[in-house]
Image 1: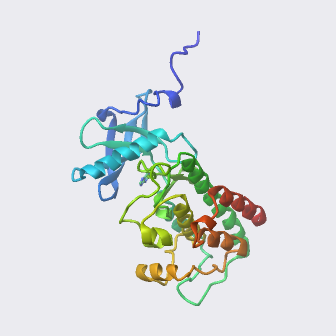
Image 2: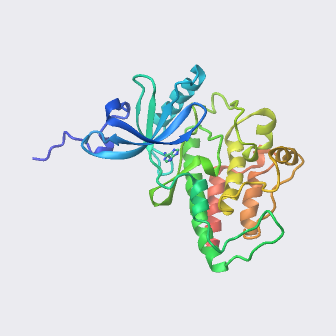
Image 3: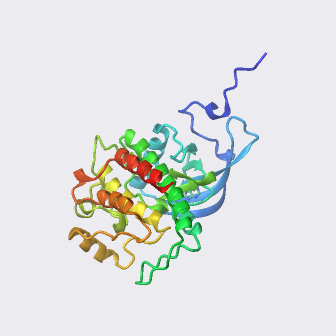
Length: 309
Ligand code: ADE
Protein backbone atom coordinates (compact mmCIF):
# COMPACT_ATOMS: atom_id res chain seq x y z
CA UNK A 1 0.00 0.00 0.00
CA UNK A 2 1.69 3.29 -1.07
CA UNK A 3 1.96 5.94 1.60
CA UNK A 4 0.27 9.00 0.11
CA UNK A 5 0.32 10.98 3.31
CA UNK A 6 3.81 12.28 2.58
CA UNK A 7 3.93 15.00 -0.07
CA UNK A 8 6.83 15.19 -2.55
CA UNK A 9 9.79 17.18 -1.19
CA UNK A 10 9.07 20.27 -3.30
CA UNK A 11 5.53 20.46 -1.89
CA UNK A 12 6.72 19.32 1.51
CA UNK A 13 5.65 22.48 3.25
CA UNK A 14 2.52 24.46 2.64
CA UNK A 15 3.36 27.72 0.84
CA UNK A 16 2.64 29.80 3.92
CA UNK A 17 4.90 27.76 6.14
CA UNK A 18 8.30 29.21 5.31
CA UNK A 19 9.57 29.51 8.88
CA UNK A 20 12.58 27.31 9.65
CA UNK A 21 13.73 26.41 13.16
CA UNK A 22 16.88 28.40 13.96
CA UNK A 23 18.76 25.25 14.98
CA UNK A 24 18.29 23.87 11.43
CA UNK A 25 20.31 26.73 9.86
CA UNK A 26 24.07 27.21 10.08
CA UNK A 27 25.97 30.28 8.88
CA UNK A 28 29.35 29.21 7.50
CA UNK A 29 31.05 32.10 5.69
CA UNK A 30 30.27 35.78 5.21
CA UNK A 31 30.22 36.47 1.44
CA UNK A 32 28.81 39.99 1.10
CA UNK A 33 27.81 42.95 3.20
CA UNK A 34 25.30 45.67 2.33
CA UNK A 35 24.18 48.67 4.35
CA UNK A 36 21.75 46.67 6.47
CA UNK A 37 22.12 43.02 5.45
CA UNK A 38 24.91 40.49 5.41
CA UNK A 39 24.91 37.57 2.96
CA UNK A 40 26.30 34.29 4.25
CA UNK A 41 27.00 30.96 2.66
CA UNK A 42 25.50 28.36 4.91
CA UNK A 43 23.72 25.07 5.37
CA UNK A 44 20.16 24.19 6.16
CA UNK A 45 18.28 21.03 6.99
CA UNK A 46 15.93 20.11 4.16
CA UNK A 47 12.26 20.14 5.05
CA UNK A 48 10.53 17.78 5.51
CA UNK A 49 13.38 15.26 5.03
CA UNK A 50 15.35 16.78 7.83
CA UNK A 51 18.20 14.30 7.65
CA UNK A 52 19.36 15.88 4.36
CA UNK A 53 21.50 19.03 4.41
CA UNK A 54 21.49 21.64 1.63
CA UNK A 55 23.75 24.55 0.77
CA UNK A 56 21.97 27.93 0.97
CA UNK A 57 22.67 31.66 0.83
CA UNK A 58 21.46 33.39 3.97
CA UNK A 59 20.55 37.08 4.17
CA UNK A 60 20.88 38.27 7.74
CA UNK A 61 19.57 41.61 9.00
CA UNK A 62 22.31 43.55 10.78
CA UNK A 63 21.81 44.58 14.38
CA UNK A 64 22.38 48.24 13.36
CA UNK A 65 19.47 48.20 10.86
CA UNK A 66 16.90 50.94 11.52
CA UNK A 67 13.12 50.46 11.50
CA UNK A 68 12.79 51.45 7.83
CA UNK A 69 15.48 48.95 6.83
CA UNK A 70 13.77 46.25 8.90
CA UNK A 71 10.52 46.98 7.05
CA UNK A 72 12.38 46.67 3.70
CA UNK A 73 13.83 43.34 4.79
CA UNK A 74 10.40 41.93 5.68
CA UNK A 75 8.85 43.50 2.55
CA UNK A 76 11.41 41.73 0.38
CA UNK A 77 10.60 38.47 2.15
CA UNK A 78 6.88 38.98 1.50
CA UNK A 79 7.59 39.64 -2.20
CA UNK A 80 9.59 36.42 -2.41
CA UNK A 81 6.76 34.47 -0.80
CA UNK A 82 4.22 36.00 -3.20
CA UNK A 83 6.10 35.47 -6.48
CA UNK A 84 5.36 32.13 -8.06
CA UNK A 85 8.40 29.96 -8.74
CA UNK A 86 10.10 30.60 -12.10
CA UNK A 87 13.33 29.11 -13.53
CA UNK A 88 14.95 32.58 -13.68
CA UNK A 89 13.95 33.85 -10.24
CA UNK A 90 16.11 32.88 -7.27
CA UNK A 91 13.86 30.70 -5.12
CA UNK A 92 13.09 31.39 -1.48
CA UNK A 93 13.89 28.35 0.63
CA UNK A 94 12.82 29.52 4.05
CA UNK A 95 13.07 32.23 6.64
CA UNK A 96 13.58 32.78 10.33
CA UNK A 97 11.82 35.82 11.77
CA UNK A 98 11.19 34.44 15.26
CA UNK A 99 13.74 36.67 16.94
CA UNK A 100 16.59 39.01 16.03
CA UNK A 101 18.56 38.66 13.78
CA UNK A 102 16.09 37.64 11.09
CA UNK A 103 17.25 35.34 8.28
CA UNK A 104 16.11 34.74 4.69
CA UNK A 105 17.36 31.54 3.05
CA UNK A 106 17.60 31.39 -0.76
CA UNK A 107 19.22 29.11 -3.32
CA UNK A 108 23.01 29.38 -3.24
CA UNK A 109 24.24 30.58 -6.64
CA UNK A 110 27.36 28.46 -7.25
CA UNK A 111 28.71 30.67 -10.06
CA UNK A 112 28.32 33.92 -8.12
CA UNK A 113 27.12 37.11 -9.79
CA UNK A 114 26.67 37.48 -13.57
CA UNK A 115 29.41 40.12 -13.42
CA UNK A 116 31.87 37.55 -12.00
CA UNK A 117 30.62 34.86 -14.39
CA UNK A 118 31.15 37.09 -17.46
CA UNK A 119 34.64 38.01 -16.32
CA UNK A 120 35.57 34.35 -15.69
CA UNK A 121 34.22 33.27 -19.07
CA UNK A 122 35.74 36.07 -21.09
CA UNK A 123 37.23 34.29 -24.14
CA UNK A 124 41.01 34.55 -24.32
CA UNK A 125 40.96 35.90 -27.86
CA UNK A 126 38.20 38.43 -27.27
CA UNK A 127 40.41 41.23 -26.14
CA UNK A 128 38.46 44.35 -26.84
CA UNK A 129 40.42 47.39 -25.84
CA UNK A 130 37.51 49.76 -25.45
CA UNK A 131 39.60 52.21 -23.47
CA UNK A 132 41.97 52.87 -26.33
CA UNK A 133 41.96 53.25 -30.08
CA UNK A 134 43.70 49.91 -30.51
CA UNK A 135 41.11 47.21 -31.04
CA UNK A 136 42.32 43.65 -31.18
CA UNK A 137 40.87 41.40 -33.84
CA UNK A 138 38.22 38.95 -32.74
CA UNK A 139 38.04 35.37 -33.94
CA UNK A 140 34.87 35.06 -36.00
CA UNK A 141 34.25 31.43 -35.02
CA UNK A 142 34.62 32.12 -31.33
CA UNK A 143 32.56 35.23 -31.71
CA UNK A 144 29.60 33.29 -33.15
CA UNK A 145 29.65 30.65 -30.40
CA UNK A 146 29.96 33.35 -27.81
CA UNK A 147 27.10 35.39 -29.24
CA UNK A 148 24.63 32.55 -28.89
CA UNK A 149 25.65 31.82 -25.32
CA UNK A 150 25.40 35.50 -24.43
CA UNK A 151 22.01 35.84 -26.11
CA UNK A 152 20.79 32.84 -24.12
CA UNK A 153 21.92 34.43 -20.83
CA UNK A 154 20.21 37.66 -21.85
CA UNK A 155 16.96 35.87 -22.77
CA UNK A 156 16.95 34.16 -19.36
CA UNK A 157 17.17 37.53 -17.64
CA UNK A 158 14.36 38.93 -19.80
CA UNK A 159 12.25 35.87 -19.01
CA UNK A 160 12.73 36.55 -15.27
CA UNK A 161 11.89 40.24 -15.80
CA UNK A 162 8.70 39.34 -17.69
CA UNK A 163 7.74 37.13 -14.75
CA UNK A 164 8.21 39.83 -12.09
CA UNK A 165 6.36 42.27 -14.38
CA UNK A 166 3.36 39.96 -14.29
CA UNK A 167 3.36 40.59 -10.54
CA UNK A 168 3.56 44.36 -11.20
CA UNK A 169 7.06 44.47 -9.73
CA UNK A 170 10.10 46.40 -10.90
CA UNK A 171 13.71 45.36 -10.42
CA UNK A 172 15.07 48.94 -10.18
CA UNK A 173 18.78 48.17 -9.81
CA UNK A 174 19.33 45.94 -12.80
CA UNK A 175 23.03 45.38 -13.49
CA UNK A 176 25.28 42.36 -14.02
CA UNK A 177 26.52 42.40 -10.43
CA UNK A 178 22.90 42.08 -9.19
CA UNK A 179 22.07 38.95 -11.23
CA UNK A 180 23.08 35.57 -9.85
CA UNK A 181 24.28 32.57 -11.84
CA UNK A 182 23.30 29.15 -10.52
CA UNK A 183 24.22 25.56 -11.38
CA UNK A 184 24.41 24.94 -15.13
CA UNK A 185 24.94 28.64 -15.85
CA UNK A 186 21.30 29.62 -15.27
CA UNK A 187 20.72 33.33 -14.58
CA UNK A 188 18.38 34.12 -11.70
CA UNK A 189 17.02 37.43 -10.46
CA UNK A 190 16.93 38.20 -6.78
CA UNK A 191 16.49 41.15 -4.49
CA UNK A 192 13.83 42.91 -6.58
CA UNK A 193 10.58 44.48 -5.55
CA UNK A 194 11.09 45.39 -1.94
CA UNK A 195 7.34 45.36 -1.75
CA UNK A 196 6.94 48.00 -4.44
CA UNK A 197 3.72 47.42 -6.32
CA UNK A 198 3.79 49.61 -9.43
CA UNK A 199 0.00 49.76 -9.66
CA UNK A 200 -0.19 51.38 -6.25
CA UNK A 201 2.90 53.47 -6.37
CA UNK A 202 5.04 53.76 -9.46
CA UNK A 203 7.62 55.99 -7.87
CA UNK A 204 10.25 54.74 -5.57
CA UNK A 205 12.82 56.91 -3.91
CA UNK A 206 16.38 55.88 -3.50
CA UNK A 207 19.72 57.61 -3.24
CA UNK A 208 21.97 54.60 -3.59
CA UNK A 209 21.46 53.60 -7.25
CA UNK A 210 24.48 53.42 -9.54
CA UNK A 211 24.30 56.33 -11.99
CA UNK A 212 25.65 54.50 -15.05
CA UNK A 213 22.58 52.23 -15.14
CA UNK A 214 20.00 54.95 -14.59
CA UNK A 215 17.72 56.47 -17.22
CA UNK A 216 17.49 60.26 -17.66
CA UNK A 217 14.13 60.45 -15.86
CA UNK A 218 15.55 58.34 -12.99
CA UNK A 219 18.44 60.77 -12.63
CA UNK A 220 16.17 63.81 -12.59
CA UNK A 221 12.99 62.69 -10.85
CA UNK A 222 14.04 59.52 -9.03
CA UNK A 223 11.26 57.53 -10.69
CA UNK A 224 11.51 53.79 -11.03
CA UNK A 225 9.12 51.79 -13.20
CA UNK A 226 9.17 49.13 -15.92
CA UNK A 227 10.47 51.62 -18.52
CA UNK A 228 13.40 52.63 -16.28
CA UNK A 229 14.12 48.90 -15.90
CA UNK A 230 14.18 48.65 -19.72
CA UNK A 231 16.83 51.41 -19.88
CA UNK A 232 18.93 49.65 -17.23
CA UNK A 233 18.45 46.39 -19.13
CA UNK A 234 20.02 48.09 -22.18
CA UNK A 235 23.09 48.93 -20.08
CA UNK A 236 23.15 45.39 -18.69
CA UNK A 237 22.97 44.04 -22.25
CA UNK A 238 26.02 46.21 -23.06
CA UNK A 239 27.80 44.73 -20.01
CA UNK A 240 27.00 41.20 -21.25
CA UNK A 241 28.26 41.94 -24.76
CA UNK A 242 31.48 43.29 -23.19
CA UNK A 243 31.96 40.42 -20.74
CA UNK A 244 31.56 42.61 -17.69
CA UNK A 245 33.27 45.88 -18.67
CA UNK A 246 32.24 49.03 -16.82
CA UNK A 247 29.71 50.95 -18.99
CA UNK A 248 30.84 54.35 -20.35
CA UNK A 249 34.44 53.17 -19.79
CA UNK A 250 36.12 56.49 -20.52
CA UNK A 251 33.89 58.65 -18.34
CA UNK A 252 33.43 59.47 -14.71
CA UNK A 253 29.91 59.18 -13.21
CA UNK A 254 29.34 62.94 -13.30
CA UNK A 255 30.22 63.13 -17.00
CA UNK A 256 27.91 60.18 -17.75
CA UNK A 257 24.90 61.91 -16.20
CA UNK A 258 25.66 65.18 -18.00
CA UNK A 259 26.15 63.59 -21.42
CA UNK A 260 23.06 61.34 -21.16
CA UNK A 261 20.90 64.46 -20.95
CA UNK A 262 22.44 65.88 -24.11
CA UNK A 263 21.48 62.71 -26.01
CA UNK A 264 24.84 60.93 -25.84
CA UNK A 265 24.67 57.10 -26.05
CA UNK A 266 27.46 54.53 -25.96
CA UNK A 267 28.72 53.79 -29.49
CA UNK A 268 28.19 50.54 -31.40
CA UNK A 269 30.68 47.97 -30.10
CA UNK A 270 32.88 46.70 -32.92
CA UNK A 271 32.03 43.03 -32.26
CA UNK A 272 28.28 43.69 -32.15
CA UNK A 273 25.84 43.59 -35.11
CA UNK A 274 23.77 46.57 -36.16
CA UNK A 275 20.55 44.75 -35.15
CA UNK A 276 21.91 44.06 -31.68
CA UNK A 277 23.03 47.65 -31.24
CA UNK A 278 19.62 48.87 -32.42
CA UNK A 279 18.00 46.91 -29.61
CA UNK A 280 20.28 48.65 -27.10
CA UNK A 281 19.48 52.05 -28.64
CA UNK A 282 15.72 51.34 -28.42
CA UNK A 283 16.11 50.63 -24.69
CA UNK A 284 17.89 53.99 -24.37
CA UNK A 285 15.13 56.04 -26.03
CA UNK A 286 14.85 59.44 -24.37
CA UNK A 287 11.07 59.12 -24.13
CA UNK A 288 10.21 56.12 -21.92
CA UNK A 289 7.09 55.49 -24.05
CA UNK A 290 9.33 54.73 -27.03
CA UNK A 291 11.29 52.02 -25.23
CA UNK A 292 10.30 48.42 -26.04
CA UNK A 293 8.47 46.16 -23.60
CA UNK A 294 10.26 43.08 -22.26
CA UNK A 295 8.00 41.07 -24.59
CA UNK A 296 9.31 43.07 -27.59
CA UNK A 297 12.87 42.59 -26.33
CA UNK A 298 12.37 38.82 -26.06
CA UNK A 299 11.11 38.66 -29.67
CA UNK A 300 14.12 40.65 -30.80
CA UNK A 301 16.48 38.32 -28.93
CA UNK A 302 14.91 35.27 -30.62
CA UNK A 303 15.39 36.96 -33.97
CA UNK A 304 19.03 37.79 -33.14
CA UNK A 305 19.65 34.20 -32.00
CA UNK A 306 18.26 32.80 -35.28
CA UNK A 307 20.63 35.02 -37.24
CA UNK A 308 23.56 34.09 -35.01
CA UNK A 309 23.12 30.36 -35.74
N1 ADE B 1 25.61 36.55 -3.14
C1 ADE B 1 24.45 37.15 -2.89
N2 ADE B 1 23.46 36.26 -2.94
C2 ADE B 1 24.00 35.07 -3.25
C3 ADE B 1 23.49 33.77 -3.49
N3 ADE B 1 22.20 33.52 -3.41
N4 ADE B 1 24.35 32.80 -3.80
C4 ADE B 1 25.66 33.06 -3.90
N5 ADE B 1 26.20 34.25 -3.70
C5 ADE B 1 25.38 35.25 -3.37
